[in-house]
Amino acid sequence: MKIVILVKQVPEADKVAVDPETGTLIREGVDSILNPYCEYALDQAAKLKQEYPELNIEITAITMGPPQAKAVLYRCLELGADKGYLLSDRKFAGSDVWATSTALKEGVAHIEPDFDLILAGKQAIDGDTAQVPAETAEQLGIPQITYGVDVKLNGKRVEVKRETETGYQILSTRMPALVTMSKGSNIRRIPSMKQVLDSRSKPIETLSADDMNIDENKIGLQASPTQVDKIFAPPAKIGGEIVDGSDPKVAAQKLLNYLVENNYIKR
Image (cartoon, rainbow, N blue to C red; front, side, top):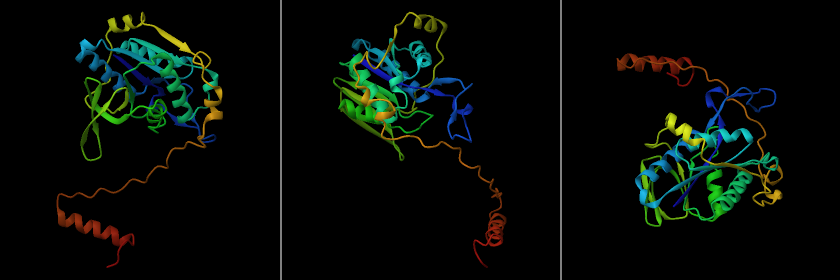
């Protein structure tokens, strides 16, 4: 059985700043990491490989990005992936979510055309659009289940426990399929020294658009129907006032006085 993991390199969220002049992210000097939700997807794949040894599961990690994005593939190999592929080409520059999903779709079709299951993070912590996995599934013409927290395999079907605003659902679909993962019981693991050393003997290959015979009119800025106009930090909110509720009568009186003093209500 073949499982493909779609991963992304992202800047560490707590170190990202926005340039007030250009409205773009300041990436210089900011460390990049494997998107946490992609790591949850990888953890799920590793668990499936352990739970179903009879399936001889092979895990392939694929990412698109500049040459330095290879670092997240090494992370994937350390955490259980068997091989990694970097889709890297200047022709991919400026790709929005649709053009990115086109490149990933072509990459999957070229690298693992007979895949059984694709796992991806539910979203990336830098863009938070949650669109790329869904659009990749659409372009591949396969069913998709989003916001999964646990995955089980049953013959030619995949069963997913997914989170909703009010609880959980159990959904099942035929494979090949794509599932996006939320956190659930999956964890961000620390690889052992042996896993780190073993990962360096696993293959990583870099592929260009030409290697995959991708029509350059379908990728990059020219093929992107959307563009980011500006990124900005929301204005800081003025701190509120906390009313001690240990004495309900006193708290109610304080709240009433506040509403009257600020002309929200009239006595």
